[in-house]
Picture (tube, protein in one colour):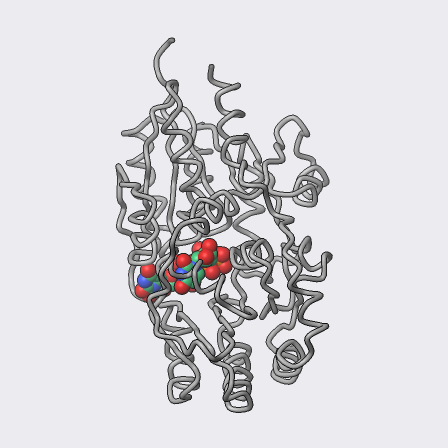
Length: 368
Ligand code: UD1
Ligand code: UDP
């Protein structure tokens, strides 16, 4: 075989690492690929948690995270560092995942350096640049610049075709989040948090920027009411470390006895928590994809979602940040067995666990 091809896989935040890990592990088995891992470390602790779990050691680490980082500063610092990395590494292709600031800046830097970009989880859209903010803009920009668009669903493939991207460059793969979930959920998992075995568990996560301020306060107030009204139910919320989230969550929910607040859980304990949960309230993208595959009803704490497939299957429902609606819809699922069972069917519209194999095949067809 001629010289190996250098594939630089980039991870910045927790969800990028979870969804890129199966691709990195699959690529490392390919004889033609020289796999290099770049951690921008837009997240520090949460990124390291995931990389440790999948035994992935970054070859380059930009250690970019600063407390309460602003988007413009983060972008500017990333672009400067990426210039040096791309000049030194000279990769044949770069893979990015999702819609974070890391993804947008890496796509732009690679475009300037005329390096091929593969975008994993391409084509998710709400059609509203403000919602989710700033992710919709990040993924639109990445789509404009990428060579390969790895679309997780038919809907995301169609979004890309509507934007004029050639059908030859859009590959429907499924979402690698299901690859990671299947690699993990079958293992013996320890949740690591003391729960009451007699009480049903409501699992909560929330961190989206467009909810910061009043919407997030409403969400916390609704959670407070639900916990007070349901002493026979326990609530678990691993709190995102963003200070805009953490400070409010602890001040509103910190003193409620059946509401457990904790640090972000490692990936395997979090999968254990999802498996244990009766229902899940979240604004997370990844959790919206994982929970249906585990048969757990999800109420989404957002006004919009770029993941309509599970909503169309009636196993995920949007409740936004409206206090009354969050309280009434959660209460309904806690009280009404029929409504609950209808949402706890276990469907997996986001993948079959083979997404990373399809991504690797596309690259190997191109390079070999
Ligand atoms: C980022 C992504 C968002 C993604 C989310 C996943 C952007 C603009 N946002 O949001 O799309 O859904 O990650 O979680 O790319 N922090 C820590 N330790 C950590 C991680 C974060 O302390 O391990 C704190 C820091 O103060 C940091 C702040 O959280 O400055 C915000 O991090 P940032 O990556 O800018 O935004 P997120 O809200 O985490
Ligand atoms: N997750 C985790 N620990 C937690 C909460 C979430 O490992 O305490 C995982 C979850 O299983 C999912 C991913 O983190 O795969 C989602 O990340 P996040 O919600 O931060 O980002 P988003 O998906 O919204 O971009």
